[in-house]
Length: 420
Ligand SMILES: Cc1ncc(COP(=O)(O)O)c(C=O)c1O
Image (tube, rainbow, N blue to C red; front, top):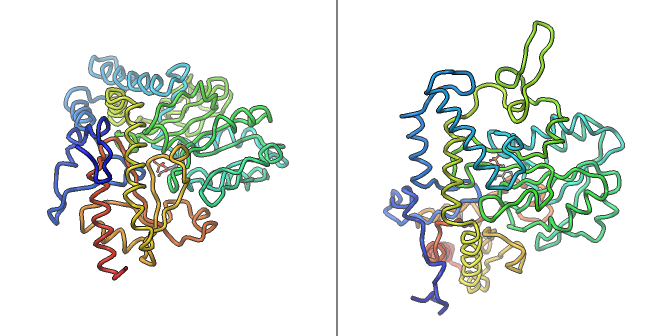
């Protein structure tokens, strides 16, 4: 079997799509579903859906407090899921994994606790021009509250980080906060350069891993990152659950974020002492079922293999970039790093003068789901001079067939808009 470009499909033609029930259903127009919006949220495999149902049917009870068997079983499953996530990203210990609702909450946790405790006027926060609003707005507010300065690593026209002046930019910086992978352009940040320099300058580093941990192997200890934030719903898990990894020494020195039940050790009418890690940061009843289902998602991703997923997405992105080339003559603009090695499975584009929203609507009529808009990176869009882009993003369940369907749908858009 060969692609239309004559290259063999194997070994990455192997499809995991059948593991994802939703992909088996045609759209309301009777089209095959080509889901190319996994950067926004991934689809869920049967194993994750089953884990949720199993929990509610067999193990449902509140955790940590109950002494009866059911509550103990729920507690065990919840903490076991934390162990799975800790192993998945190679945290030093499960206590370094704090459950949050999502990446956004994990970043805000650091901003409201470590940030308010450690920053003052005269300090600086360094981020990049690529950031999702969730890794920008918290730092804008922190800077406003503390008087710290907010600085930016600039990016070039391809969306690659400009590091020539990094040493100068790091002077006085207490926190470097950057995304591992850009959700708009797919740029993979050169963490191997930035993290050691940031540490040498005395800064703590937070990595927004929302777009990296679903797609390739993460080792927080090898990266030597201080904080790492991620969302379950982008890595085959349910919505409403995410996590923050933090180095124990930093987490221990931080004040609590939210307060109330579960995060306490002892409460008197006047004073409270706080629980140990990780529960110090988990106030109130946790999202038990979704944490357990995220554990099932980790099992699923490991069973497929993170190296396979990374290789598959690279092959698919390469195939897509090649298949899209003929459209360039007809006005397609493809954004992001030109070299495959610098980008993940995200392709942002515009087609002639068709507005991205109109384009996405036409693709939708052909069963192709792509996102259109600013992708929660409004400053980046403004810098690049794009009012909006359409974005196709790949995951382990996508195949060359999805890319071919995207190209056929682009052909249709060209016809509708009478492009050459
Ligand atoms: C790079 C990046 N950071 C943060 C987020 C926010 O994730 P969530 O909405 O799950 O908190 C996203 C979501 O698209 C993202 O792509």
